[in-house]
Length: 110
Image (tube, rainbow, N blue to C red; front, side, top):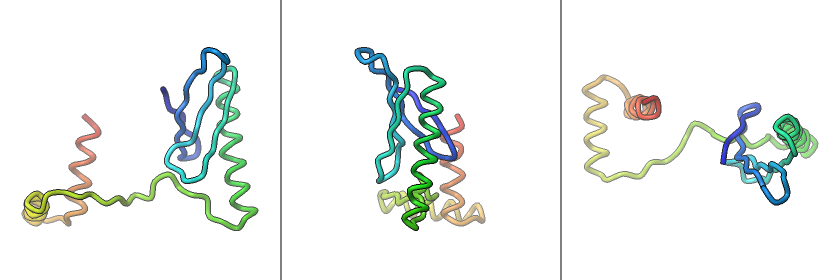
């Protein structure tokens, strides 16, 4: 499985060997947005078209298009770790949010 990106939306793509076609689905949305193509060029065009159709559909309905990521998520952790993180952030002179964000950035850039 691979991914594609368009206008901040990410889709997972698979190849169906029997049908000889690529098919994809936009990830991290409540709405279902799919697309397909027989070539990479056709797949890219279909993905962009599906996103544009989704955005137009939302506009017609007077709704804000769902964004894949808001920048907020809840993390549940052991209370002792929470305390240690809070203390470390205080010592570093930053908010807990900034401290955790920095740690996450370092983790994904390895």
